[in-house]
Length: 538
Ligand code: N01
Image 1: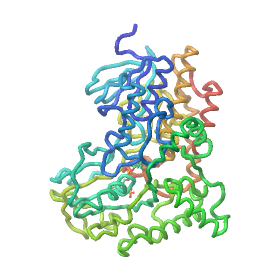
Image 2: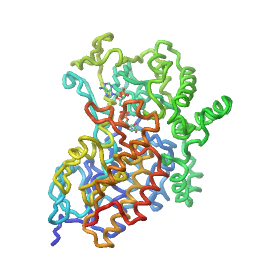
Image 3: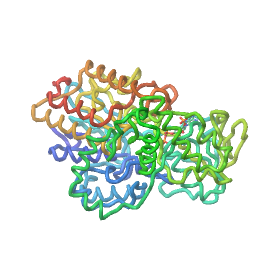
Image 4: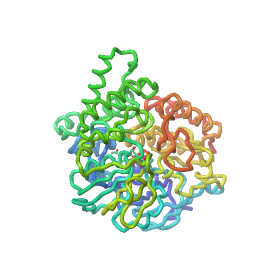
């Protein structure tokens, strides 16, 4: 018996992954219900509306690969900002009419697998509050849907305006002529600093680790050129899956940084620098990510470029220290346009949190040992996310054995192929743990995984399979594999959200599949071609 709240599939999340997954499942003819905490589609782009928020992947890869959608939409800029992305999602809605499947302003808080019925029961609160059931559960919560604010003493004492970047009010905060503090210099912090530096009365940056920011080279999109490519976009997108680890239109250079001549090396670094975007990071010599000497040579080049832009020598140790504070593989650089010029302004200062950690937040500002209590009108918390796993584990999802995902992963993350987990039948996720996630253009990762998941579901439907879940042996082997791949790189040299190192008490481990999209595709396609041999089929 099927009631109005019983579905074939329930999708959680309305970002790129969720929308695309709903679209694909509808094409299969399934009855789909979807939930999104925001008021419309767009996922994290509804909340990440802080000043300067902008995509770090360039046109055309950061979008849905659906011709009906891309054929008559053009981004204005090579790297679109949040307003353009919202304009894009409005266009997606016009084309796909996807909102009809969604309940918005709705949070999925719980779901559990019922062994008797072989179905998931999902509890939602908010506008779509209720209990729903489905055969398939698709968690499309992305890698950054759970923001993180460190437990600074006195946080709630501050009487001024304070927001986390990922919970920024869409009506914006007027920062003109204000005394502003930014805590954190990851991608979000860099973007805020660059944007607000020129308009504020004063800017104080509370920094623990400098960002190795690299040039964006923003420009207007050549719309005529993009339109001429559109008939071939399918080939363009396919090509990114072959040539690039991260789903870009460029990949690592196969030459070793150490085997070319110094002149060749310099010329190639210059070329990457000039091209902008992630070329200097994901299009560089392949061994910059794996070899300490190569990593160091790339840092020396980067430092030379940055020093040439800094006019206040007293800030050099904080922005471009002699020894790199991180590795290129271990921490994601942000793209910048005028980030370093902002620090040349006399009204901008850095408080080095490694030397003087935050003692407390006060009614008027922030107190550290050497700088004392500094007063602010606005504090921006650019302190990141409980990334990769947080969006999933914050939902109380309980599998066939009654164990929650959070409990299952309390001693380490176990997934199979970064899309499924043993004892969680017919549950799939994407752009999350042990997928290419952190090292991949978001829409690429989500769509590659959603395509695979859709095929798996189609296979189950065609073969009258009630429940599909990977074996424990398969996920143990996959976990070891993901960790081994990471061990070959310089990622483990740094603590960051890549490994859970940004959250106190979170297990440090490989949270992402680092070998790149081409290898990942081979692995997941092999599983499909073997009729999901590592899955238990009930
Ligand atoms: O977060 P982060 P993010 N005391 O974790 C500091 C994507 N994204 O929001 O480096 C003091 O990188 C922390 O210091 P440290 C993108 O993939 C993309 O910036 O740990 N400071 C760090 O400086 C990105 O990589 C875009 O020493 C503390 C900062 O807070 C990912 O999201 C835009 C602290 C957090 O940086 C995350 O970026 C925005 C503490 N207790 C985000 N805890 C684009 O594509 C943390 N920090 C453009």
